[in-house]
Length: 303
Image (cartoon, rainbow, N blue to C red; front, side, top):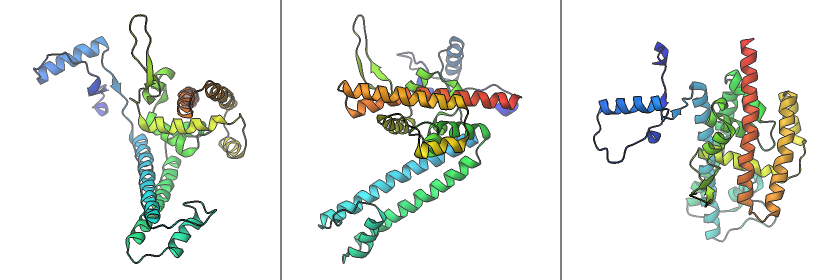
């Protein structure tokens, strides 16, 4: 319809108001109800990803599924070895190259189950490598605006290319959000049931995008360390050639989030609660960097 010049909006079906006790449903009634709700502003429009966003999101989610499959395959193999009393030599870490070589050459059973478990571990590892290579190629071929936001987010501590690509593919256009709305979309805000003079807040809602919430919380763990720019982070910032205002936001984020992490930990919060709270604030800095990058790209395109 949009190709024909018709302004279209996709509405979230679960957010359409429903009258209690209304058990008569016809196309005519539905059309009238949608028209009234749209005029009143009670409908929530859904952002529809374009082909580039959808292709990137499919790759990111495929890799995430592959990592879960790899974890299951490793668990099956390790539990099989423990069940038969086989443990790796002292000082050898699990799932390293030496560990896999030890399983392949030193562990022998007459039954064929070990070979099948080990084959699944190798197959999962090869699948992840293949998907990561495809993801690198997809980012390189992505539209300029999409690629610019991914590069800008990599200036943040704890946000490398994979995390940045996941955030961008799950959110899409950052300009359609306000910071608090984005935090609610991620499901990282506290649930609340308040009435009268009583204020009751509970655990996070978890009603938003689970993929976004997972990577943001993992990135927030990096802020338990003192503010510092060096190593991989320094090389990323130099290679990406980012504007000074982005680097200032990144440094501000490191200082604020580290102080927040330290304060919550000293106040007796457990690690999961602390990381969740830091991740929620990290989303605010992510929004700021992404919106600035989107606006700068639009201005350069218009010029």
